[in-house]
Length: 257
Image (cartoon, rainbow, N blue to C red; front, side, top):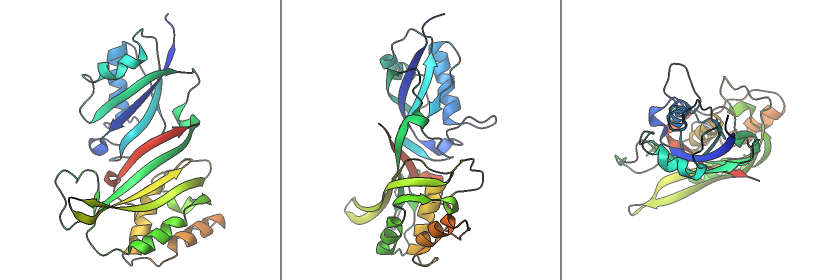
């Protein structure tokens, strides 16, 4: 038996055609496709572990996975070798040998996501997979104020969907901000919500952004985010906003100590 090598692989993907990252028996997933390609390349079954299990339709530009291999191929050659085995919507960027106990989920100190909302009157055909199109009235300052309430160590029990198996609903958020961008000469055509935390609950970000959107368009009152967080701290439920589609969300970066 050859030497067991632990490999860190950085990947990016368009999640449109996938039922999320995590392997499922009767659905096409990022993990399933990636493991099949690695198995063909390395000539043995491969199980990968990811820093974050993105949901259906969610994209990634900075996902990190790890796996063990007995193959003799140098880790740095794996991304190029995978290019012909992976579909066009999954790309392996770089690989390196890491310590045998490296666990991208456990060892990550923070993850950064971005949710994008297209505000232009028309949605460009090349953007529709990666943004939520909402050209209606939104109060940007109200949404900024709501976003600031997320900062700090808070209980996000009211910002998780059913099906979450997390042991605790407390998370520490270190970045929660809105950014407006000028696209093709149109000021503020793209609104981005950037959020960094030590971890996220099931559909947490999509509920956070959906709540701010509903406040911004007048469907929920200002102070909803603060109320939901305070209610969770006291052990109560609280009505928050809609859970937005996954297509506007992207895992941008995973940070390690």
